[in-house]
Structure formats: structure tokens, C-alpha cells
Length: 192
Image 1: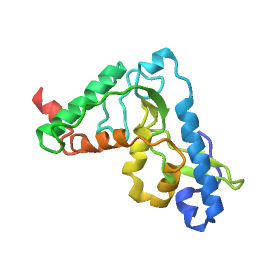
Image 2: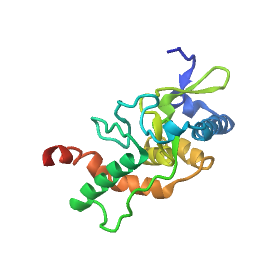
Image 3: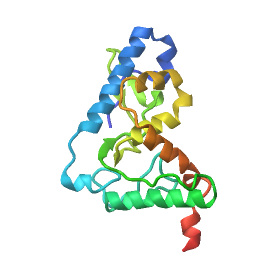
Image 4: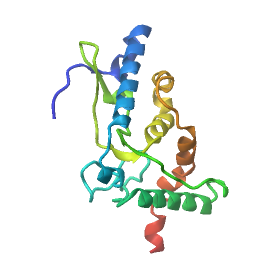
């Protein structure tokens, strides 16, 4: 791991001019677009979760505290999320007619893009740090995580949303299952 000289964007945001803010957010948007466009191998396209680890559990905003998986395929990941939807519906925390999850494309995803995880170097270059939650996940998970954390950095997030693809449907679906990811995260363990 290397040391990155600079300050977090969270620390210096209020001191930046509007032009500097646009530059910072543009760099972050470019990172997201580039990250999501990196070609995956056939094996990676079928193996969601942390990169290069078939036995690792998925962690991050869209998974319970203990993690989830490992998922042997995109279909198994989809089934896991659909089970979370069933749990949420059972406890009447999501509409009965909420659509099931269907993931078309997996992409390389950071899953924790936030001003606290961005270092602004003295040369104006932005560095993305803290890759602990990253992995190969469905397209739209990055947007949904940003959307759910918008209140922590509303101006930054709103500017970023003007520059990246929006996945409102995915964000809505994931918000609907939050009950199963938090309060009811242990339901499957007790039913066994």
C-alpha cells in the first residue's frame, strides 16, 4: 500500500472554488466510467464478489454486516437479492408487487465512493482510496450506493450525478430491501 500525499476531498471541499470542485467531480466521474468499462474475463463475468477470490464474502453497503456469499454465479447473486426481497415483503416493508431483481451486466465497482475516500493531491489529481468493498457487482450498484449516501455530501453527489449514468430503478429496488439487509439480516439463519 502506498501513501498518497494530499487531503481528503471531505476535508478541503469547502475551501475549493467552484471551478476546482467541478474538476474534482469530473475526475471522479471519469474514474467511475473507466472502472465500469474495464473488460472482464468470461470467468469474472460469472463470478460476482471480491475480485480474484472465489471463497471471499461480499461486503459493503448492499450486504449485511457479516457479508454475503460467496456467490458462484450471477444467478446465485440474483437469487440472494430476491430472497432479501421476499423477506422484506414478508415483514411488509416492501410492496408485494415490487419487481424481482434481474442483473444484466456485472462491472468492476468500488462501492464506497465518497469525499472521505478521495485524496486531492497537491497537483490537483484525485486519488480513490479504500477499496475494501470493491468487487464485481451489477451495473447500477455504484450509483445506488452514492444515492443512498447522498445526505453525507449532497453537493458533491448531485454534481457527480450530472456526469455519470443514472440507475434509478436499481437504486429503488435496493432501497426497498434495506430492512432485510439490516434489521432482518439474520432471518435465514434462524429458519434453517
